[in-house]
Length: 316
View 1: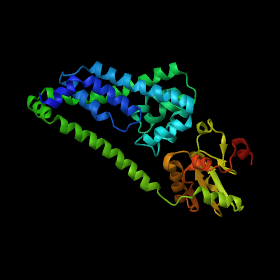
View 2 (view 1 turned 30 degrees about the vertical axis):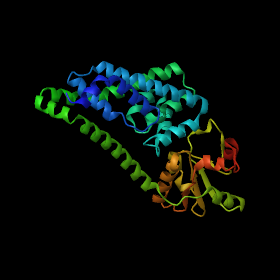
View 3 (view 1 turned 180 degrees about the vertical axis):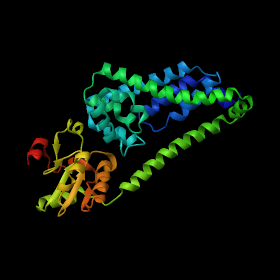
């Protein structure tokens, strides 16, 4: 057996535990290629499937519990931090909030399968005050489903190799190269996805200073707060004159959006993803004077610009 493969087999369970724990804590080193490799080795009877799954589940549950407690204590700030660490940072906030709104705790059962969702599901569960026992039950179930599906896919490949000694010997000799190719391919695919999305939403943004000048001068401007209601929990305020609308409501009310003034959209997503995406959608509907606010709510707040209570803005 090649030295690299021999070392991996000897410390496989520890490697799986540390690798999955590291990924789930926010370091973008995808564990899917590792679990596929470990699954393949269970098919060739070099590793035990149950122990591989146990290592992955415990590691992920520890990391998720840490993020749950951080989300419970620090709320939206932690969610945005996790999103910035994620490969899917451009979309994960909105996607996760919608899943929790529609499915509640059962969203945790599919969280690991949805790009971006698995990154912030745990801190959002803590932010909304989900019972920890309930969180552990559903989160552990979701982790097991995810780890088992990936590992069993690798085991299927391992069973094929086990029936073909020549293929098994060839794979063993090129173990490191195959694993590195799997890892690079997975990372490359995710990065290409992210770059394609960013290219699609890159457009002229309005600076907070520019928007403040417009408001100070009394110029007509239509401001839309695209944040999800969960984002209001840590700070129930918004920009002066802003209308709170979720993206689907904004599309439904597009006929009522004025065409004779600047339209500014803002959210809490990294890179203003939701605002940029909705700006593109409105432009396709013929509404061209629309721009996302650079930095969104957090940047406006950081600069110390005026904010009003959500209820006051809604009434106005």
